[in-house]
Amino acid sequence: MNNSLTKRTWHYYAALFISSLCLLIPAFYNHYPLVNPDTATYIESGFLPEMPSDRPITYGLLIRLFTLNGLSLWLLVFVQAFIVSWLIYEVVHRLTGEKAYIIKSMLMVFVLSVGSSLSWIVSQVQPDVFTSIAFLCITVILADRKEKKANFSLYALFFVSVAVHLSHPVLMVASLVFVFLTSRVLIDKTLTSIKKVVTLLILSVLSIVVMLTPLHKSKHIFFMGSLLEKGVLKKYLDDNCQVKSYKLCVYKDSLPADANVFWWDANSPLYKTGDWKSVRPEFNEIIHNIFTTPAYTKLYATATVKQALSQAVTFNIGDGNQSFPEGSYVNKMIVAYFPNELNSFNASTQNKEQILDKVAPANKLFAILVIVCLLAMPYIFARWRNLSTEMKLLLVICLTGTLLNCFDCAAFGIVNGRYGCKMIWLIPFGVLVCVAMNKGDSKIQPINLSD
Image (cartoon, rainbow, N blue to C red):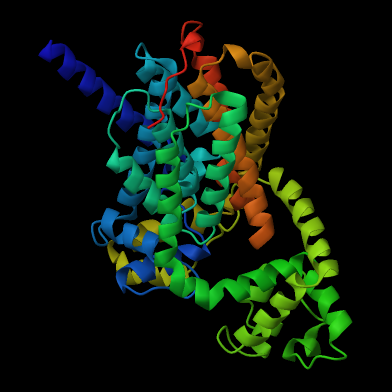
């Protein structure tokens, strides 16, 4: 029996290792972990260490921890891949039963690696992957049919996943509330334990503690960029600049169309009127006036819905993955904290070729898989009563997380392919788990998880 257990354990970890490597295919193709402009800020924040003005320090500290204090960024992306693989295995194990769940999980990871955006986000030095990690944690925690005690490692992983990005607390709170209420109607009111949901909600709110400084310093900047892209800022300035002496009024007819230009371009009206700190009173006043005036609030709401719909069909990989030559901020951070990898970084496909041109076929493939999975949804919902409560929970979480992520990005940010691709892979994942279930698996009886 011990030999059998040892053999099963060896098979399990070998499968996890192979699955983790599958999720790093884009990094192997690039000959180095993928980076984008934000990567530099995360690296610097973790090694100084110092809280950035526009994001939490959490992911920067993870970079320092998982690279063993600057040994290699390959270690970081491998850890990301291992965590995702482990959570996928845990979900599949709970939903499809004991038999053959390892081989099913391996096949699923391989399909997702080559047919979805998952491997791309895992292979990047970016906290994007932790958005879907948080949702997988929610799934495993709520669908756990055996554990009588709390799995603290899962709760800790969930907390860290929420704490790596400013957009996560609102997204997780909204998703947990929606999943809890929906489960009472569409699944089984005994499935989602109130104690578990409340614990996850508390952890989501507590994560804000590590974000207080960047929230205070940057929320007015990012929100103004969002209002700019929605057309609300221009409308407000046109209507009020005759009676208000805003510094921004001088530039109301030359506002950039792109929020990224507004945020980062040195010639942006933002920097012509001051810096992030000095413009705070004026920007906060404008934001307050917009949201206390029904006409502007309606315009904002309408634009948010339109942008959310646009984000729902915008999930292309490659956004921000341009080259970073000598002198760029990212290159400087590699020189400063990963000098032994500078040659590998400079020789990467990303820095030697136009990698963005090469991902177009992959984006088409990903889009086809998503469309096929969405077309399969009516058939799945037609068999809703035959699905286990855990399977229903997974589908609700995958759909809820993907859709609310679109609204979260639209309401507080902008439409971006990166924001979509970090979550869209959950749709194929949910369908693949349905396909992987045996007939016997679909008859699993509801388990009372109430405390």
